[in-house]
Length: 326
Image (cartoon, rainbow, N blue to C red):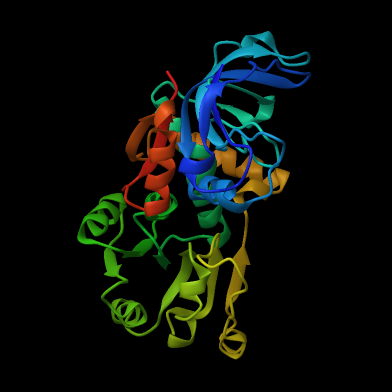
């Protein structure tokens, strides 16, 4: 099979190569998926740059979508021919979705409705599941005001849709007028240009000085600095799934304590089995109903994987970056 891979950490142009690798065979409890699309996420490029390799050769990317072509012992033969999307394809294992085929445990290949394209399916594992879990951790959002940092990002775009459809009033931080339009189309009532506006001041203006009830945060290193300014109301909750700095982040302890602020953190790769089942059920219901809009901002062939990684690193694409494998 054709696949992209690397044998050492480093810049995309220095370490990524495309060539032939053996086509894998499914073991007991596994399926082999003929991949049609592979999603490229920021965590994939960060892993390629510096995460310890899971094996002597790594095929990157955790997200993808395709068709089940073969099954191992213990997996119903009826799954052959099923359209599926993949989660945790390359989490703590060496061979991900940047290849024509992948084998993995059968429950990590989730049925993809006919109405959803393979390209959109390749956006489910990290962006959409992160969004579903983040909104779940906020608790009931109907009638509440929430702030989504990076509301036009791959995750933030899904968070905005899910929260708005659940009855929340959504405010979102964005980096440009185009991104503001994208966030508003997803359901954001108002957007805040974080590069040029006082975010905390605008939040308080939009909430009559009260602050928001909840925050879904992609960058704790920036958002922590806003907390002492009252961006989050007393007894509010911040749900965080990332930070733009690799080290520790200082939070304003006394302010959080005396306003009873709740901080929740999660890693989408490491959900509990119960949380994973609940999140998958919620996401699958949305996909079946066709209630989510998917934004594939750029598509590259497998031979263009270096360009794809560099586009993700540059943040130059509005929407998800996908590798076409057919």
